[in-house]
Image (cartoon, rainbow, N blue to C red):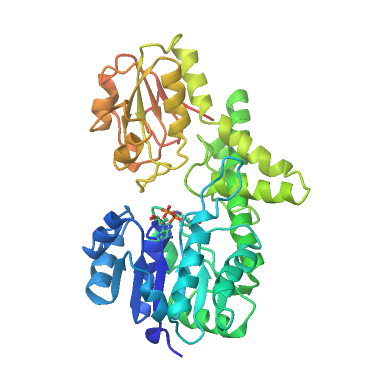
Length: 427
Ligand SMILES: NC(=O)c1ccc[n+]([C@@H]2O[C@H](COP(=O)([O-])OP(=O)(O)OC[C@H]3O[C@@H](n4cnc5c(N)ncnc54)[C@H](O)[C@@H]3O)[C@@H](O)[C@H]2O)c1
């Protein structure tokens, strides 16, 4: 078997689905993306990424001209060797993972298989899901409508980072294949052969848990650095020197130790919450994981505390918020640390003026009545204060732009500014 003979369908054209499809396209025969949003399909078929990701536009142009297409129709499932489920698994109000999109996708696969299927199709769960989901929820859904079908089932978590997604997909530290049957493992090894990364074979529940534990560990590193940073600020120690020294220990590594306004995004907050729920369902109180979330919830509001130490009342004050995306190089605002900060400013009667190089449009859906600026400088115009929330490189170059502020009160939540008189959240 060679990967060039494989036909692949991906369900869900989000950050993971589109990047996976585009990166797999050169390795396989055909790639079909099935998505419910017609806008996303039109964008993909005209070689325009529906999300912003560095390098994705160039890659997509080649794929669309060769073997990749997007559609609302699920029929390609019938002729695919591998069907990836890459739909969202957002957070329910009780903190657990919402599996409704995943289950709907599995039902659709089952319906298509009932009409026609390839010899031993393999269903791959790429979405992040609680341990047990692939075997206990997805597999039975397929089996119930296709009791006589021989099919493979696999959990293959994704570790890409938004903003570097293409690079991460093509050069991962490891590829985790969660499956118990040899045939499925063989197909997955063939598929990923061209990527050339170490493959770690485990069972599906371990693969599911590896993803949750990885995210929880990285989130814990950030909250740890933030708590140490808060203490460092209080006692006048430079947390960046401290964490550099800590990270020089190979057992720790220097990554994810940047003290600042906390973590956001579509993964860390929801995945840590979901893991807490799993622990409680099994009679364990996740003391450490709860603290990780607690530090993260209070961290951005420290920006407001610092602001209020310098500006007695925020009512009617113009506050420039620089950075709306949850991190740089993305237009994603999901769980961005800017959201609680903007909300707190509004609650206190302030007038936030928002600017982001990429994510203004996405944030408008959450704060439609807020004022949006076209540049950092226009956000700063006559501002009484400024909060820097995202580590966009362009903010590191800001200097004379601050001169247009009414009052020069600048709080840096990301250690990105290079001017001398900004106050850091943790330094
Ligand atoms: N975004 C990341 O950086 C990242 C990284 C690793 C893992 N993950 C995980 O991967 C999964 C997907 O994440 P995402 O950020 O790409 O999600 P997303 O919300 O950006 O995209 C999901 C897409 O699936 C589509 N969809 C939902 N149900 C569908 C259906 N039945 N048929 C067709 N399309 C359907 C939606 O319209 C949407 O476009 C999640 O479980 C997430 O936790 C995300």
